[in-house]
Image 1 (cartoon, rainbow, N blue to C red):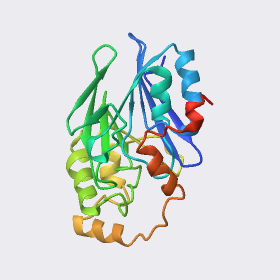
Image 2: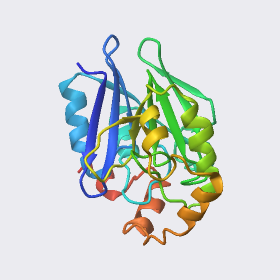
Image 3: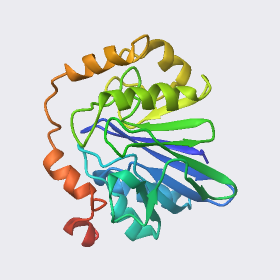
Image 4: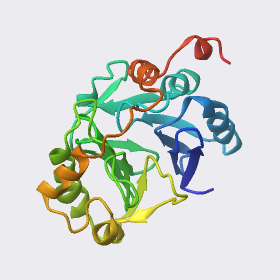
Length: 236
């Protein structure tokens, strides 16, 4: 059994990650997508895994989460960033807080705001799950949900780039077929951040003028409730 499974949603270019502990058969999922609920449940059953935690990196604007449905079906607990104010989650994560599962598996929560005010990354076994804060050769936008370009620059350069160069980066999105990167690669090659001053980064981000995500009006209200809806309540 692998210790990490990666799923991809074509509609929103979203990555979801399933972390496992072979000894205990316990698992954690990060950023699950609504329409792939059956896929996750099937893999959990096939591998005889017990889902313990469902983590969100932030309240997503481009897809609806299946966090609530997964918790309802498996008995897992939802853990979300404190500053995202997703009050439906049992665990409100503060910066530096740790979560455990399996036998001595430890996940550290890192507050990395900027894409949104509450955005978090997670560090586990030499891997960083960076949400939308740090993408492969890019970063998340900063023009809604109390985002701030200067704050994102600080989160990337001071928090995420403080990890060793060999640390593997797993983002929440990719639009070019990349599946992972490393901190060293992003320091040297990230088109939005490498070699740029804080002022240059802010100027570039402020000039992006991106259209709003097509699902923002539906996704954010749903995700503030962990994506729970009538379809899930009906078990469909």
